[in-house]
Image 1 (cartoon, each protein chain N blue to C red):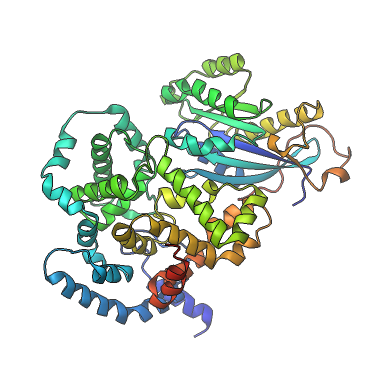
Image 2 (image 1 turned 120 degrees about the vertical axis):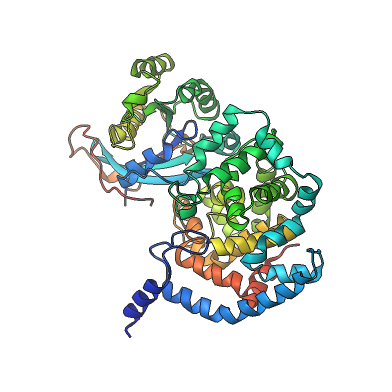
Length: 327
Length: 212
């Protein structure tokens, strides 16, 4: 078969919508996707078996074995349980039975509700499960989780970006209450002050990323300085959405596996890894705007598939992830 | 492409008023009813022609939500023009204009040209803010004013281009220091070569399409 025919045949075989409900981009390299999937199948099957054995003993206990397992990716069917366990969200849920539902039945906050509603249809418009005509449309659960969180933590209320984060949580756990406590673990403990009125935590981490780049990738830092491009332009979306809606969904969820287990340092590692992997591409940008464009491209399209396989492959991950690890 | 001048714009206003849709209509000539919301700051560019000169518009599109102001504020500096957008179907977005204007004036250079835009003019039946109110606000605060529809493209070209004309006139009058890039204006490589072989202020666009 000619390469073009083979590519088309592969494209016909790859479903239009992925396991999470996201429509595949039109320019997806289906043949490469199939190849990487085929190469991974045996590994994934073996890993699934190991996870079964690990979790058979009951609860999720934090230890080095678990961390090692998580680094290699949590199978989707165990993801909600593992995240709940390692983040402490399960403990919170157990200690506060019925709290989530009481929040939703409590006092109303009209401006909070309006702010959340404004963004419902702007959350993952490329995901069929978030469309209003979907059988179990996720817009209402998303509204509930965000509303409950805003009432639970009035100092934060609702901040854009939280909709993407909560949306991902609902794709992983079908239980609103679990999504709520996972959101609380992320926003309250793992990433404090990211979404507060002044976004102080977020801005601090952006500065820290800037310093890390200056130390580890000085050429990239110099390029940004030369074009007068602030870090917030390149990496704000990465950090505000925690790579949701930035990286391909499977890659982003693999990042979240580590985020729940190891904390915010994971965001820096992923950011640095992306910048390092695509350093040459970034450095050939001729202007500030072109640099911004390229910074978006390295998380999408053909480049994103590269990153996808990078997260999937333990050997590559070791090079990219661990060697870059500044901690 | 070579240009005589580059103008930097910033688009500001409450969340959901249609800032990104205005930009998309201007750069790509299309309307996307369902799209991702803007997080932080995004970017678009297009070439236009004023007085026979190629002018490149570099446009920074900002997130409208309050929390993001701490991030977006830094983009006021270095902007020659601002589009301040409200939604004619939501009174709140009009009421917040004063705060936006104070913020813009405080953090930008004093010559920045501000265009006030009442967007969603296609939704006449749901109108909450009269056109006269927009005009009055603009007059009172020394802004240019237009009602637009990013959906039907009505006045979208004009909003971006008229702002550029105003900036261009200020340059001709010597109000802007064009050698200081902090003013949001950059002289292009083509500038020295162009001369008055073209006629009038036609303001027609050239080379549309996409981000650069």
